[in-house]
Image (tube, helix red, strand yellow):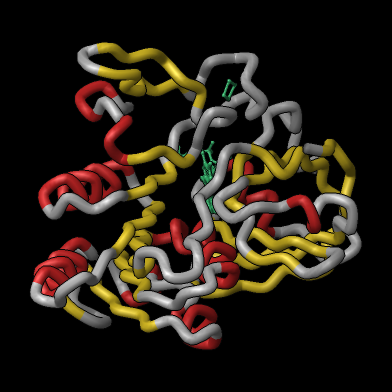
Length: 266
Ligand SMILES: Cc1cc2nc3c(=O)[nH]c(=O)nc-3n(C[C@H](O)[C@H](O)[C@H](O)COP(=O)(O)OP(=O)(O)OC[C@H]3O[C@@H](n4cnc5c(N)ncnc54)[C@H](O)[C@@H]3O)c2cc1C
Ligand code: FES
């Protein structure tokens, strides 16, 4: 993990409120594992002391990018920044996804909205191609379809308003696939998900129902991002009836779905 001031290489609007931001970071880029995040201080902001966490989307040998939605004060300032301007980043942070092994389970990725950003590197580095299930409210919330297709992944889409793909939640096509998979002898799958908490909980429930492993990237509000403030804790099972608080910024954000105590996840 490094703390550095880095330069913006490019910033492009992806769709409506979504932006792709590429940062020059030759020392950080080679360290990045799928599912890790960057904690970004948006230097032109007045209260720039508070960093914002963003999943690391794509990397090259000397850059990494984030894919973000303009939702508030920080991201609004970020969206106005241009190539050549600087940000302070701490990265890579967190415990990411386990990259599938050769001959292991078929990976099924599940993303809601900007959750796609956390899953791209996993898909790219996986020796096995699988299916990525993408959900969002509307067509504009369906990100990266082309990026995943370009690396050979099948993409299945669901939108709540029916404007693209199947109508409904992303868990519908996932459920259909899990049912279909049950008919195929010796087919083993593993789920990897990133998105809003209700979606993660629904994916965790399906994993339990179909007895398949699942890794979930938890989306909690963060402050320090490095394990000192405890703003990001969730309850995590430690065996039997026991649980403990863990920091999603350091022990997470990715957990085995069976570890999460859902009633108390924020
Ligand atoms: C590990 C991690 C990875 C993330 N990756 C991405 C990413 O790849 N792309 C992306 O667009 N966003 C991502 N986020 C969410 C992102 O950090 C927030 O959207 C951002 O901090 C909002 O900053 P702001 O100042 O614009 O919003 P604020 O003005 O601070 O808040 C605006 C709204 O955003 C909500 N918000 C703030 N933080 C979060 C959060 N963690 N989750 C959900 N809602 C939040 C607030 O409740 C409020 O409603 C990630 C969050 C975490 C914890
Ligand atoms: S954000 Fe401070 S401990 Fe996790």
